[in-house]
Image (cartoon, rainbow, N blue to C red; front, side):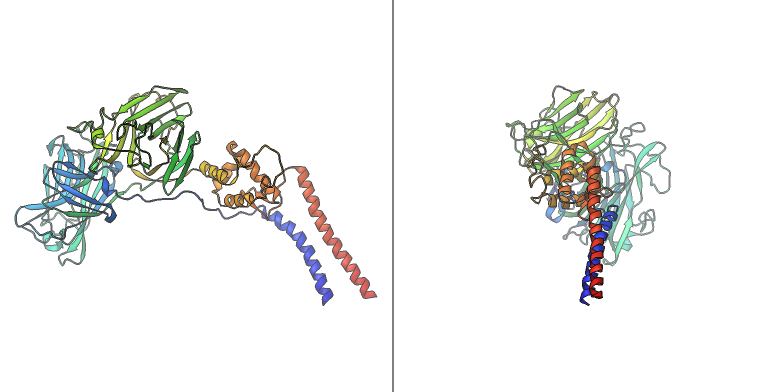
Amino acid sequence: MKRNFTLFSLIGFGALSIASASVALSLRGATDVKPNAVYGAVATDGTDYDSFRLMGTSGSFTPDSANKKITYSGSWADNYLVTDQFDTRAGDYSFKTHVSRSDWTAPTSGDNGIGFVLYVNNDNYVDFFLKWTNVCSNSIAEAVFKVRSRGEDGNYASALLPSGAYAGRGEYVDVWSDGSNWGTSVDGANINLRTGSTITPALGFDMTLHVNRVTYADRLADVIYLQIDGYALDGTTPLTVYSPRYAVDCLTNPEGEDSAIAERKYQLGFNGYSNDSTELSDIVFTDKNTVTEDVEITRYGTVPTSYSVADNKITVDNDNFCDSFMMTDLAYAATDSFDIEVAVSGTGDNTEDNSAGFTYYFDDENYFTFYFKWDGTLATVAVASLLPKVDGTDGAFIDRWTDNGYTKDSEEYLYNNVNTIRSETELTIASGFKMGLKKVREDSADVFRIRITGADTTGVIHTWYAPELSIDSYVSLSGNPKIGLYAYNAGPVTFSNMKVDGKPANVSLSVRELARAFTSDYMKMSEVSTSDGSDTGACRGETGYYAAAKAAWNKLDADARTLFLSDSEFSDAKARLLAWATANNEVLDTDANTLGSNYFPLFNNASESNNTFVVVAAIAATAIATLAIVGFALKKKKHN
């Protein structure tokens, strides 16, 4: 038995030696499971309760972001609680809130109300609100649909929509609750709310504004209706009801038939009267078309002091003037309009030349930087400066000083809304703000407008718009310009809550940045020279560098591995990685682009390939010879 054990052990060793070479060869063609990317994250953007503001001369409100609610007291036809944070250009959207007031009682005379407003300015808006009166103590008496256009109630053109589901329009449309107006389905018209529901602020209910953009007879129009989630007459059984639908074109065609503005962004919010301290909570805006926009970020230009992308935030510390950008991959045609918005935060104060803004970038020879800048004297932003480069030559600065032509809360000039930013704010990067850049192609020029949104010295959020800036230098260029972010001389600056044409962006590193991050973190390019020719332990990866690099490499996004191996930017790092692998008797699987010890050693040339084959053949021959010798010895001993 002992002889047999020895013989079988030797046979097993020889077979294993041969099989090891076979397995190593077969595994070169194996496909690994695709690893997950190790960088980037997706965040969900929510309602900013602090960004609401009052338009009008009376009323009050108290935002409570921690508890996701606003306490609002309004007055009849004299104030609106609005925000510009939602992209009303989406066309198809809904806007929902929960309404409650614990001390509410039905009016014994007169009425009170709460509802929605679609607000352009004091002369152009649409109201749709619920009203309670003394004739109905348990539910709404009616809803009121009201239009104000060009400074007059009811002054708007018919949308020319067909009859049927769309009700007629007048100065006021009374949607009475005791007739055949409301339904338990859209256009249902089958319930009397006074005898079939309990809808009051005391009990609480949800109200939702639905808006759908339609085109009819070459006219744009918005179809608007309400959804109420309250209770049946017993006050406990949930009940959902819908108002009729109403179509108007005053928001999309503000001057009549030939004035369609598909890109018009109006503000959205609430109106109320005689309903003090009403709580509006869990406010949700839903774009029914597109929820999010995926955006990849790549560093362009001179390398900044530091930069990172994580948790849907971009952080950069840059001291390179107008020469280092965090570029998005947004693909716009040169003639396209766009609107980019982002929140800005950090430690930068009003120190001279602290800057944050955007770049509009065709190539290294043709781009501009448009940025807000502080001057070290003013407590708030001093200027928005644009520095163009055309055909490789820097142009002259174009400045939009904040004491000259900035409008508040509207792109249009209105009474008393001009040149208030310096007297009303102390906006810095440290205080935080939002900034936006909008572009529209008009005739033979591009019209750009930059804006900044933040709190005034009383804590109320406003938006200030710089005067428009028309540029014709880039209209003749073809291709797709890129839009990027820029910070300068302000320490680490964080850009977050990016919105692309009103859609929240999911921000992540681009494939190139993933490859750059791997190179920076693991290839030790600045620590170990690639040109000294020394055969040190570090050059051979014996210091633990290779083990760490291999683990990270095999987890890296597959497209990033492909770029790393093929792009000249990474040629030195690639050579080092492959040299480390060879020094550690490991190879690159050229199918999966992963590293591993189970692969045949990497052949750098034909001679090395032949030498390796000789080694394998020698191992096999040694195993066979060993078997022959053992067999001869056993046979000889048996005969003895």
